[in-house]
Length: 120
Image 1: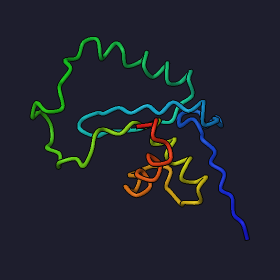
Image 2: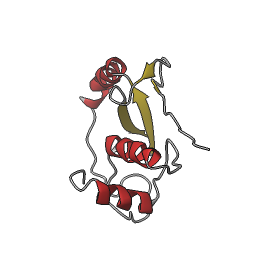
Image 3: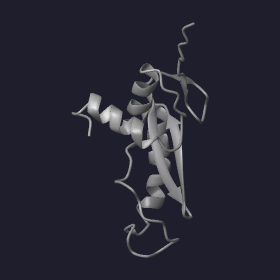
Image 4: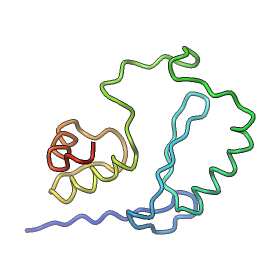
C-alpha cells in the first residue's frame, strides 16, 4: 500500500490557501517570546508596514547583550525558516514523517544537506 502526504499551506491571518512558493515565513519576537507566521506576500508586507512605526522608534538590542531571559547554549546557527520548509518538503518526498513546525531531527538535516550540498 502506498501513501502520499500532500502539504497545503494557509495564510495564518486570512486562511487563504498558499502554494509552497507563495508562503512567507515571518518570525518575530515580543516580550521574550518568538513567534512564526505563514503569510501571503500581501499580508507579509502589511505586517512589516504595521511594525515599521514601532521599529523606527525602538532601540535594536543584540542577542548577546544580556538583556531579557537567558537562553541555553545552541547546538547550531540560527535556523532559516524558508530553508526549514525546503528540508521538510524534501523529507516528506523521501517518505519521512516530519512535523510542520518545531525542531527538525538532526539526522534529517544531515541527510538533506548530503542530498543538497548547495543549500547550506
